[in-house]
Image 1 (tube, helix red, strand yellow):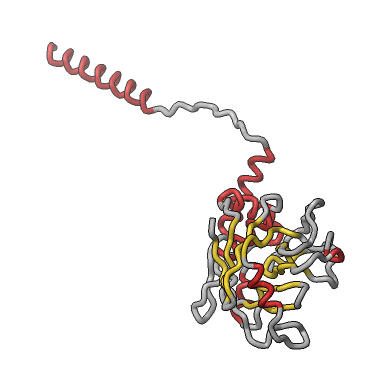
Image 2 (cartoon, rainbow, N blue to C red; image 1 turned 135 degrees about the vertical axis):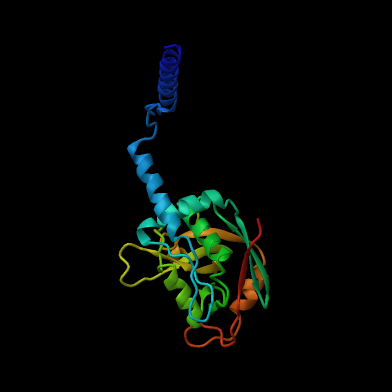
Amino acid sequence: MKSNGLFFILVILFTLSCKDSSQKETPVHVKIEETRTKEQVLKERKEKEIARFYKRSVNRKGDSLLPYIPQDSVEVFFTRYAQEHPETKVLMTTTYGDIEMELFEETPLYRASFLFLINNGYFDETVVHRAVKGFIVQAGNSDNMITAQKKGSAGNYQLPMHILPDVKHSYGTLSSAKYWENNPENWHNPFDFFISLRATKHLDGEHTIFGRVTKGMNVAEAISKVETDSRDWPKTDIYIEMSVME
């Protein structure tokens, strides 16, 4: 009888122990209040979607291309890129010398896009493709297949026009090119830029000015005087290299 009683006591203690253990292991559900607004949640989802596009591809020859930027994500993508890359000074290197430029913080999408293209090697193999004495020096394009492939890999994205009311085209301003025909939205071409060699009122309000030359206008002047063809394209290619200074 004593042994039976001891057995029942052990069974009861084991049962209670299991019950306590199961109670301890039962997950506690704590209701977490959502502090973000619906707009913030949607924005974060959009940024995550865009991040998946931010990966470089290669062509058949193994040349590095650009990450794909969907046109409807341009503003979100480059707003984030601008926050991650605060640099404002860049260097353009040519066989004629160096040109230092300052990018305006007041045109953040243009600054971010320009830095993005530099950091991802777009301007490698591009040239000065228009040189007009006393007017402009234009660069960022070439007739090489790799340049077209890089633009295509990035989706050939365009930037919305951003005119600074108090900034006019003048000696040393840095502006974005655009297509004048079949472009009612006034989209600007982020791959193509020009340096003004004089005040050009007819360009004011038409092209976004996103920076200025701080050093090396003598180099731009020298390039503007080279021999060109009927399209103002230099007869001898002037390749450029772009790098971020600070």
